Image (cartoon, rainbow, N blue to C red; front, side):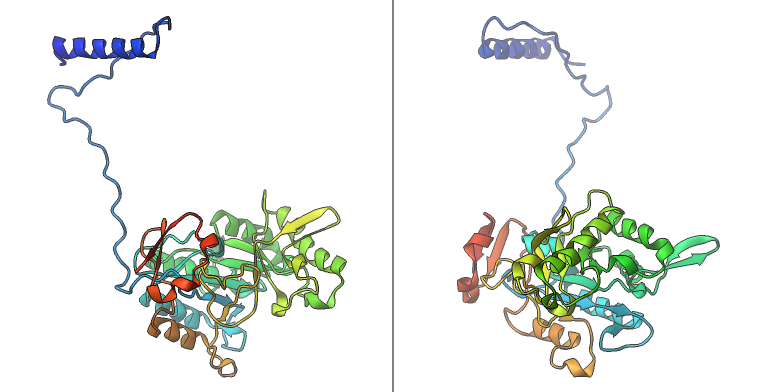
Length: 352
């Protein structure tokens, strides 16, 4: 129980504070928070969470390259545009073992890369919204996600490695999104609820260069309307160009309108074929983001996924490596001239 002296001191302190605020204010009643009961320990403030342990001992380099991976079909046979479930799982294991952690395309483009020290960002993108990317199965009268589709594999991998990150962008064709038309709405809503991004891939997968300006805007606005009818308050953040081909008027890939429907893409993705620059690099162009085709098909040499990851890992100052502090940008002295000051967003730049 508090002593008379402590109570008196509290009253005097309150009175003095009231006088300092100015005379004439109406005095209000107040209550003092009770102290701990006899024999009870005072409540302790929770300590700030400890920083995540380093993922690797790689030197920080936040001007390094970022692999933006491009998947298409996830299916039973490996091909030029196809990856088997087994190969996709192996991709994830390889990336994880080399210190890569998934970030969203939005966070990459905006420079909001918050990873532990020694980790490297990787961005997953899936084009064409084929059924193998997201499939439902019926099991005991219930719908379950196919463990061999891309969404199922990503979910399982993140249960095994919660620190990897459950992030990806799916570039959809609205009329045929993920097959199984009876579940289309449910799938799109599931992606949105889980924080997996839905990107624009046009209405009919047409090479935009062949179209008039009006038709280009129709191709890009109709998906905005269609997805917006299924996902409340939805707006596209990015566009993956079909075949990597821009419209004749490139600005229309980023912004336009058709029939009263507007669209705006803050990022535009190409088809190939190398890791993309850091968002703080002078060469970074959010409207022409290169991607690594996720295949080891012989005809794409030397741009196969395994070769690209090997080069990133083994070449000095090649890949983006986090310093563990989202408020700083760590730059090796050898790369300091590549930094774009206007892209640092007020973050502290540390050159070493």
